[in-house]
Amino acid sequence: MASDDLLTAAEARRFVSLGTADLTRGTLLAQYVTLASRALVTRVGTIIYGTVTELRSGGGPHVYLAHHPVKQVNQIVEYDNTTAATLTAESNTSKSATGYVVNLTNGRVTRRNDNTTATFPVGVDNVSITYVAGRFSATADVDDRFKTACGLILKNAWRAQEMNMGQVDEFDVPQAAFPRFGIPNVVKDLLADEWHYGSGIGD
Image (cartoon, rainbow, N blue to C red; front, side, top):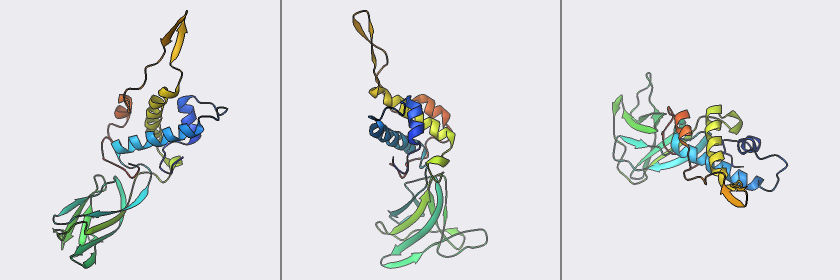
């Protein structure tokens, strides 16, 4: 199982009705859990905390982080040519010439200078940002809404592994349709208020 999986092995088995006595498909199920987890992350943003360092190009007042929601920004360093400056978070009581503010929901970082919006130095990949994105510390802490949504994606995908033919008299008759889409509509309805923050670390 991957560290950013949203379901434990036991939870995954319950969603697809795979008993613990079936030892032959455990590895395959783990792969499906990872795929289902990352499919959900691409729609609602990062779910399990992860730390990432990104490079962004300056020249404007804003840069956007790839993974969100953001829990915290650890460090921002901008380079004006070869001169480095470490930025500090702006607050109501601190307004520095090398400040920034970050929107934790959509990952927008705004450069600030003495209580006014400023501009990052012009350059290619000259703004280095280290931050933590996500909502929960580990798989065990993930909210039931996200676990259920992931389980429904998993259950839908797992249909490809199930026996989908039955027999009526001497004829083989399909019992279940092969999945034609990755994310059932019910998942979007369950997480309508979270849809679509953007991509996540598991992408």
